[in-house]
Image (cartoon, rainbow, N blue to C red; front, side, top):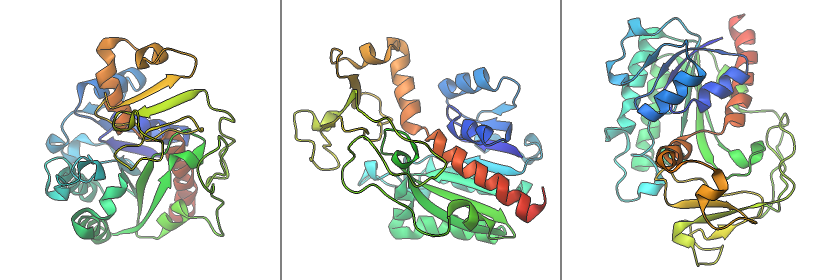
Length: 298
């Protein structure tokens, strides 16, 4: 299967789909730091910058459109400032939908923050679903957390899959029967939603500290999360300087722990904060490949 990737960032979605056996045939990313990463790892793939300038003729024939349109206007981190799909950044969904209509891929994949579900009292999510429905896609959605896919980080995201003319999307995001979940706070081991994912790190050797919670108890509220070393970390913040992850046996300096140069820290943290969990994307991608064979005889 061939993929057109939009809002590509540093290529997390692209890497996950590539690991699922797909080919990345097109990318679009506006930030120079992200572009440099994409050019390094996908040097022969056409790369466009501004999605508002992308035309139908720029995009090769592909089977899947994939992308997480900007979340800043939807995120709960921006309480009181959420403009939803009326915002200039998250409103780029409309351009994404325009290109989907123009090219008509068999599959559409969207990743975004859980805040998409209740932005504008649910009206924005209704727009996303109804738009894909009007374009002829059977649409399914699910919130998945990275901590159930073998990664030591809590990162809940909304995943939307559309399959043209079928409800194959439901078979991608959902499995028959029940799934085991971890009860209570993590103790370093997990029960995973995805049966194909192996065991997590059995013990912790990192501390995670969020700036609003430094000096506060670990059970502080969502805007003051404190610290933890119980096997997982809070979602990294794309603003860059607000979170620290340090080794338990190292001085409290994030640069000492990561070995990243000063000039790269800001861009790196912004990119990581906006990135996706690759194992989740790989899991979804493999299920899309199987559903594609079933519904489209690919």
